[in-house]
Image (cartoon, rainbow, N blue to C red):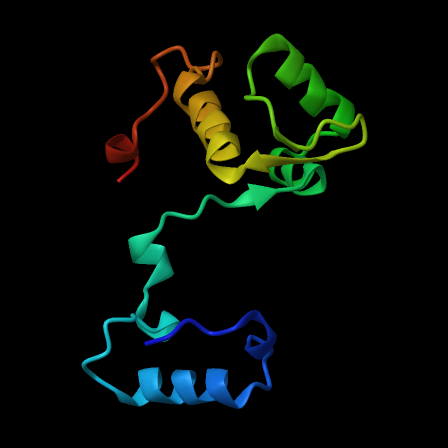
Length: 123
């Protein structure tokens, strides 16, 4: 098969539409149509969240989140570009890991003395 010339690559090109139809209806085609790909299964896609979403998840203000980053408690966000104003996003998995680490490290209540009745004593 000859390559498609650059001028024929437009969306309305009859040649390109013909190739799409041929690939869609030909079950022996070696080209895997995108509709058969299960992206969640085949390619792990990390979820990125904005600072506003991190603020909502952690119930903290922006300054507190950046303080956590500065102290190393929360991983640094991904920066898209080199500019000072480049977009930054956190990996949702990093934020969840931080919350889980807080949950795992939290002590039991200091108010308990060990003399409180258990649930079996109340029944």
